[in-house]
Picture 1 (tube, helix red, strand yellow):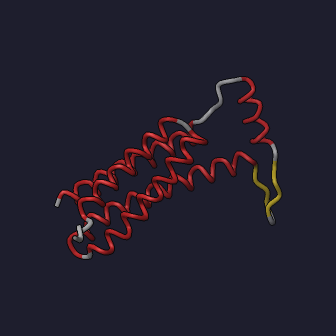
Picture 2: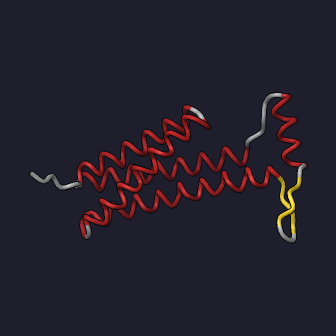
Picture 3: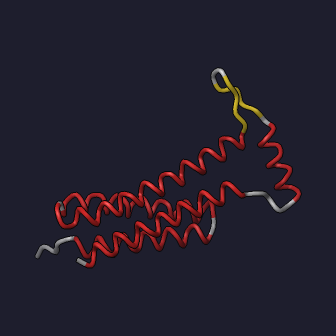
Length: 141
């Protein structure tokens, strides 16, 4: 079952993507004077939210870490697909298609808003899921 290997490769790549994404949000510091000014403004500007208030940098950090959590969940789903292939192939196909579509969306968003490294990781993870999907999808003639 070569598809099992490809699902596990995609799982490991998604896990590494999540680790890199988390790390980048936790250590991010702008390098330019303008960037530092914006970052400082984001950390000082508070937004009332119910009984408390948060800063724009809190939103930035929260959304970034939430995205990383989704990569970890995708990693789990991809690993789980490797088990489903032997027991419930239709379930593996459905999950694999959803992972592939999600990585295509990630590629478009990464290319537009983030950068080459993130787009490349989307290509690698989406490609490995696509290969696994191609190997597990029955060909009907």
